Length: 342
Ligand code: NAD
Ligand code: TDX
Figure 1 (cartoon, rainbow, N blue to C red):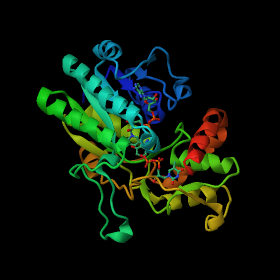
Figure 2: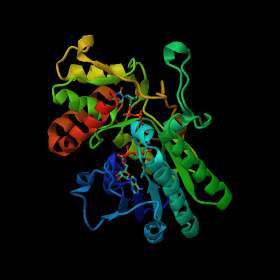
Figure 3: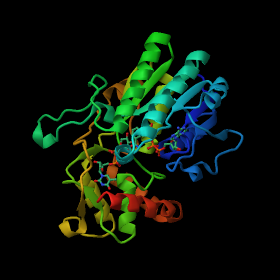
Figure 4: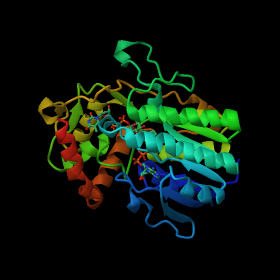
């Protein structure tokens, strides 16, 4: 187990990074410095209430070595969440994805190479491309740590590029790094551009959920709290140079998810008129599914939110109680979707 006295969390004001900061404060004695550029996706409010003697927010860019280098020199470990994270945005404008996800990760890797600091890189299952639907191929395949990389979108290609950089810095320079590739997260503080918050807030606003294409695409849902617990286990006990897949056996089609949301609000989930089918995403990945046996066997991790429907119910209740937080972003987000017929 490594000593984690002071940790730099990049992207710690975002959806998943802020959850990890809370997890660190609750489960370790570590001090935390958050480095975040505070893009449109940042969730500053999610860091309120944390002890000021343990958590500090530094506003800055991970691609700026002048900002990154002195911060890395102060810490024992870096946990790297900062990214441009939304596939649809990457189709509209890939440039910030290349800059933050690739140049930003490179900048951090150069800093930890120089300082010898432990590095954990947070990545996504999307680097593996997609899988056939279960109905198309039996038995169903799942991603493992050995699945070849085959990213589909500018977002997933830049995350794949960042993973490759981390592996090269481990092998060529002896950087002490681990990588995790997690499936789709849900939970509080997720931006309303993403699928589950968008559909919950559409229904709250009296509109219909909006499903891309035929809605049969499958995602493997995991609660952010479970993701954070897995990342901490890897940081503390993972083997250097290794990759761990994180997933909670939460496969659901997009249609199943919107029907669960409709059911929760007392609407008829089987009535096709309750759902609006909109233009499909270009290059839309069909199915993701994670085999997380390595993480479970080596590090003893298991998900606490084993029941997706109850985690979803908690998440819906959270969005109902936090309208003040999501409402300012909602109108602009919907205007940009409307412009694309989505
Ligand atoms: P998010 O978009 O909610 O948050 C990203 C955060 O990074 C924001 O606070 C933003 O301000 C910050 N950021 C962006 N560019 C930056 C830069 N140049 N310098 C400093 N900070 C910058 O994203 P998220 O959904 O919380 O994802 C966090 C990480 O987890 C990403 O690396 C993503 O690839 C990965 N991931 C996400 C999911 C998911 O389902 N959302 C699943 C697996 C992996
Ligand atoms: O309005 C919508 N309707 C819809 O049908 C939106 C926003 C999405 N979708 C579909 C597309 C996907 O099949 O829902 C699914 C989930 O979409 P997103 O929330 O955009 O997630 P996804 O593209 O799967 O990527 C997410 O998981 C992996 C995160 O955004 C990534 O950061 C992470 O790496």
